[in-house]
Image (cartoon, rainbow, N blue to C red; front, side):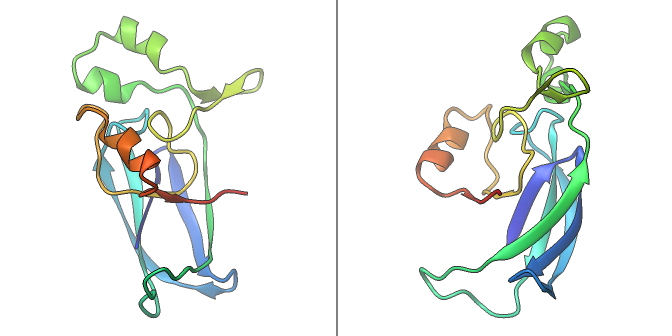
Length: 136
């Protein structure tokens, strides 16, 4: 089961039902759904298959700092002066605002590889309910 977060963050712990650690491996990959232009993915090995329509509860710990970053925009050729005014998500001492999936993946999600540069695929995936997420 894949989970993704911003490359500005790191996975610390993933547990099933809040007390059973599960095995997982991590990898990073290029994605424009996060302001850094990259996601950290944890591929979780579940102890057994989930029945169709079934649910499970994972407790996920992660951390890091969300700072202004417009790497995804300069990577596709947008001038730095323009890019720096377009991606403004930041958590600082005096100001904090983070928009979410499609801008900054600051909470774990499970989504197929989609791209903002491919029309409405990100927003179609969100509206179709094919993004698994839960925060508290």
